[in-house]
Length: 137
Length: 137
DNA sequence: TGTAAACCTGTGAGCTGGACACAGGTCAAG
DNA sequence: CTTGACCTGTGTCCAGCTCACAGGTTTACA
Ligand SMILES: [Zn+2]
Ligand SMILES: [Zn+2]
Ligand SMILES: [Zn+2]
Ligand SMILES: [Zn+2]
Image (cartoon, rainbow over all chains, first blue to last red):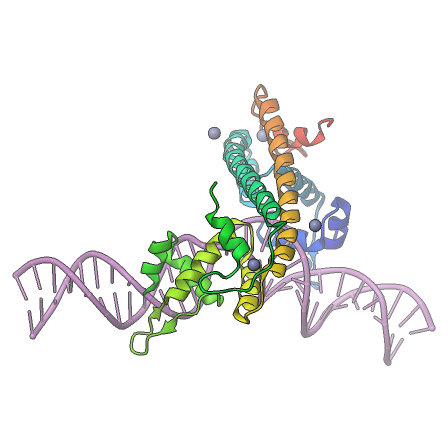
């Protein structure tokens, strides 16, 4: 199976499959005359796993570690539990950050609603941004 | 003023100041004998503005556009209003994505609590991830 | 005065997770 | 045989910094 067929089968772009191949998550065989990469059913299975793991927030490096354990016949579960704990903390952090940013942006936009446009002058580059930054919180 | 002094004054790393300089947001003068970059009070003001804008979710390219308007003496306000609308949509999208991912991760971790570790077998690389992906939603 | 260590600098590279450009190979229609 | 459509691997690029590195500068001390 070539890259396009595998990609379409699992609903990703050929470039994504190439990327996973490039970093060693998939290991197709190289055709001798073609140079084209040939993906096995096992690669198919691995790609499916990659996509499931990415949906759970694992990074591609996480997945590399999981594959490494599994390829040695050991249970990857302890690794998985450890990794998702980190990712969970990160996601929580990102969630809080995004939440705060979103609130800030909303407040800014609303407070700008009835303010006029102004030209830059002196130290003030854009009074909307400069003034908002100095607002009492 | 050299890079470190400016950086410390505004609480960022010298590398960050160098980055903003590299992409043209700051324009220090080059000392002839030293090669060192020399930052003016205006650069100080610009950096302060950059940090305020970044806190509101503007990208550095957004800020470049804002500076461009301001440097020509025009009001950057219309640009600012237009740009933040885009960033607001993006932030909302990111917020929703993060919210969903966070929920998925929590559900996964909880459902894994009473499941044992298993070795890989057949098509199953890690049953925690493989099984969770097949769960009824 | 020498000199060695501590500190500072600019530049180049690296990070994530792919997306895109490009030169060339392959294959069917005519 | 040739034209065009399609496909391929490889190299480069993106944001927003951070880090590594080689070399210049200043300071401490003899
Ligand atoms: Zn497992
Ligand atoms: Zn924890
Ligand atoms: Zn303005
Ligand atoms: Zn809108």
